[in-house]
Image 1: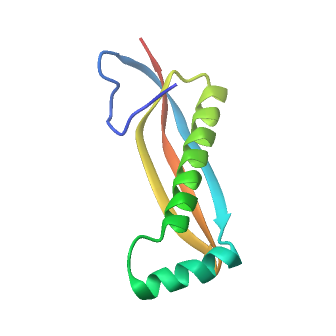
Image 2 (image 1 turned 90 degrees about the horizontal axis):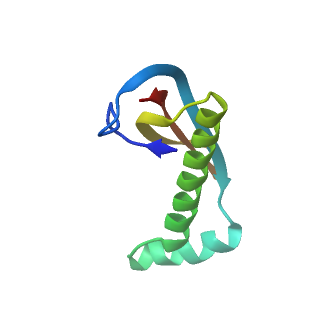
Image 3 (image 1 turned 30 degrees about the vertical axis):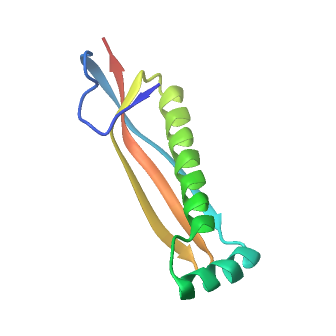
Length: 104
């Protein structure tokens, strides 16, 4: 499955748009991480535990989007976008979406 942020896949012709493929996940913070990250927030520097959490969430959302596109019979997903939002005090959603297409 090819996924691109552009409107087309280089070297291929889009023959059919199948619809919007999407995948999401909601990840919650860990209380233990919050304590260590709060200290890091005071002293400065990257909040690595949160960076790793969001990276994992992005990968999961993209994987679910690709699975959704495969169920539609797509060869690729174009115009891929990622968004995040806070859904609770301790949790954030990451959603990946794009247009599922068939290629020639």
